[in-house]
Image 1 (cartoon, helix red, strand yellow):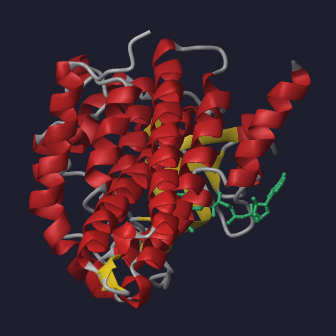
Image 2 (image 1 turned 30 degrees about the vertical axis):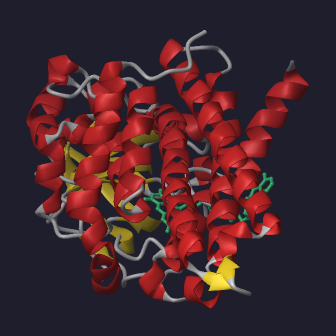
Amino acid sequence: MDFSLSEEQTAIFEMAHDFGQDRIAPNARAWEAEGTIPKDLWPDIGALGFGGLYVSEDNGGAGLGRLDATLVFEALSMACPSVAAFLSIHNMCAKMIDAFAAPDLRDRVLPGVVSMNTVLSYCLTEPGSGSDAAALRTRAERTNEGYRLNGTKAFISGGGYSDAYVVMARTGDDGPKGISTVYVEDGRDGLSFGGLEDKMGWKSQPTRQVQFDNCDIPAGNLVGEEGKGFTYAMKGLDGGRLNIAACSLGAAQAALNMTLTYMSERKAFGQPINQFQALQFRLADMEIELQAARTFLRQAAWKLDQGAPDATKFCAMAKKFVTETGSKVVNQCLQLHGGYGYLADYGIEKLVRDLRVHEILEGTNEIMRLIVARQMVAA
Ligand SMILES: Cc1cc2nc3c(=O)[nH]c(=O)nc-3n(C[C@H](O)[C@H](O)[C@H](O)COP(=O)(O)OP(=O)(O)OC[C@H]3O[C@@H](n4cnc5c(N)ncnc54)[C@H](O)[C@@H]3O)c2cc1C
């Protein structure tokens, strides 16, 4: 058993880290205040191969494994977890097209997706269905030319911002087998967006409802086969969960690094606060927890890369454990900064706000427990 990263993996981490520190970190607060990420950032990220991280090389992607991808998200999140998480959603959609779309659709859209001139959003959640995603009601009715969409998607990251939407919609009966996946380009008649959601964190990513009102798309925009959309959507989520966990890990590591520096400079009672043993123990606990989270995350990613039968269970366990560890660590880091931790200038309070949602999306952490417990009971 070898726990070390290969030379190639170390290079991938460093490339993502350097790009993040150079191009994202200096702007993260401004983008948060503006409520948007400049669109021209994405083609530069695409040029690094990060627009199709696990899209096969035959289809123009980087062809990386899931473990490699977690390194990219861990490294980029050290600059800003909101920007990194948005890239994860794009990659989840890119992989669905790579893996399941017919050659016509794939060849038409993937080059733009991989280069990130086309930025994608993932549309599963609806106002009335989140955890119970298979209860979705958006309909895609067959027409002579293709499909006519009606319904509303809620909480869509990149809603009103992205260039195209990968949408799970009902083409058949109730239940998961009645769901299909379709590709909807921005600008289609009948596609509109709700108001900008005012959120706790992830503020640089616009979140809006995505609304379909007799929105027609051609038959060629069906991704894969009718009735398989829910399976495709769930397949994307194992990797999405690893990425979100990696985003928590990277941001928490960045917070711990900042805290170590701060504690060596800040004095109280005549000495740097890093000399108080009670606080040293907290530093040690955070280090232990983050190292455990990193090892667990990489094990889950390795299982997914191997196609292990228990990969889904491990992805769920890692998502729950790492996102909760990340939130706990950034909150502790805020505490160790005293009042300054509460000020935006010190960069910690943003991380507390950004990481909170990682416990809610890509399946809530209650749903992660459900996945784990069901498999335990069934076995
Ligand atoms: C900032 C943000 C961005 C998002 N981006 C996207 C996106 O891009 N695309 C997308 O499709 N969705 C997105 N979502 C939606 C997200 O995936 C859902 O919010 C999430 O799945 C939870 O669904 P819900 O909000 O409807 O909560 P509900 O499903 O209503 O859950 C409410 C509570 O009940 C618990 N619960 C529900 N069922 C069970 C159960 N069986 N057992 C135990 N507990 C249960 C939940 O864990 C939760 O605590 C985003 C959400 C946010 C906040």
